[in-house]
Length: 408
Image (cartoon, one colour):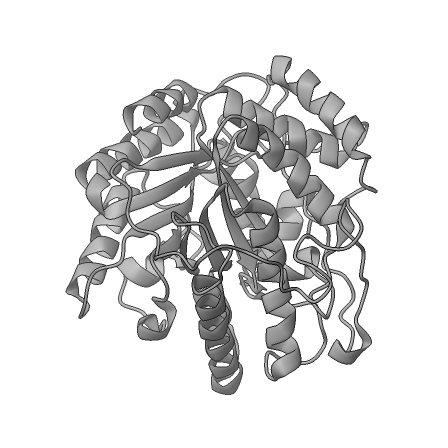
């Protein structure tokens, strides 16, 4: 889905990170590679290797670690992060732009770096790490590690309505689970100390609504196995919360999503959609009502209510998307009012995002949501103007900056 140029050497990336720290006004976007060709699982696929020889998790994917840790819980304050979105500049390597974007978010007060990566971007068919992706992630995360920041990472088993696993066969059998376990090993071997949230998704209920009952059953079983493995992993940090990423609408509206099978792990990870089921833009203040309704759904279920993480929340500003810069500001005012009213029940909130994006990126992403051509065109317009900065700061930008301090 995202386009990656060959990875630059880490020394070059370090240079660009230093440069970006003083020039963060250039808004940027994390670029993902397009999904690689699916291959039979037995053939291994494209391997690649991380920066050092071999993967961080070891050749067998069983890197060492400490004693098992307890489940992550809801923090006393809301953890905020800023998605490092940007309009791609073809004159610069996209990995350099991604690093600059990550540094920009850190520089303005974002305590957590939100990242969503398709599984087939992270790993080959046997779970072998893809070097181009891991080099980029290492470089983006390095500034947060240096400043004591956090990372919220979501592994996309699916990407909205698109299957995102790195092999041609279905999600069944020992080989599929072994590939995911090796990916999890790699994530924790590299980032366990910084990882405050690890989720599996992305927007799983969209995919489940599209596929057959049998395909949905296989995905749900695989999801449960993956979360169980990550939750019990010896390298898991004591504050890493784990969950499945679904839409906020699956929690706040009466729908067909199998919530009992999706509410797994330590928290519920939700993604806010500013469009309704008919691809019409929601009112700016609808987000506060959806948060309240989602929390009511969680509290009404048997057992201890899981905390809610809002992994992605944003609103467009472009008139051709049916919005204005003032309505985007109204959205964030409503969002932060809703967060303040429920701060004890919320963990992480990812603001989407730093800068507006290029039309080609949004067009490609809109296809993953499905729907008619008209709906996809509307989606692309919305996704492309959800940044808080373009050629200048938008009116909502000061409100977001103030929230970074207010919710700590």
